[in-house]
Length: 200
Image 1 (cartoon, rainbow, N blue to C red):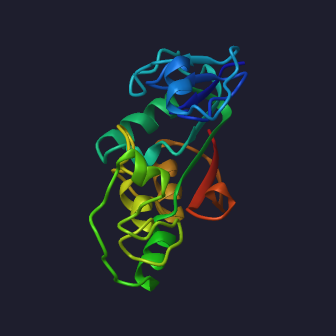
Image 2: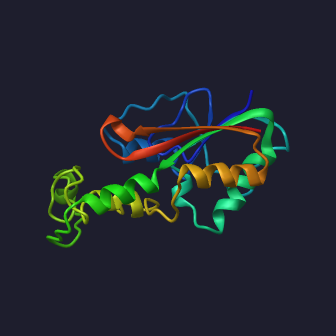
């Protein structure tokens, strides 16, 4: 079986081919508190031109990837996914729930306090425009990371947004026949996400 985990970042999976710009050693440096198995397979492929034949891949996982693709890149990636998946195979992915983030933003206080900081000290203290919290108290605090990415490292910027309706529409356009969407909170307490399992 060929199973791909695309844009794995800090969550590479055993028994998958993990596709990421970072090597295993890069991941160990980037996430020093995590332990990564030597058995992990991590490769750096062009996600818009994947080296797999049509109808050859059994499963694709892509958590927290699509929001980092531009409007132009989005269809290129999704067309590669549908091209290489076998009939009946699944594409599982998660993205921030843009609608939920908008509701939270509108209900939060419009209380700008200070400019964004990304020094080691600010990062260690969870600095978000002076709120020093992951709570959604302030419109200009942590909730902004849902829209734009945390911006504390290369590749963390968000370029796109998703709702369940958009997901269902775009997957139908490229040829997926079945979709299941559900909501969850990343880390269990924040960042409303949409989990999708689509079948070709």
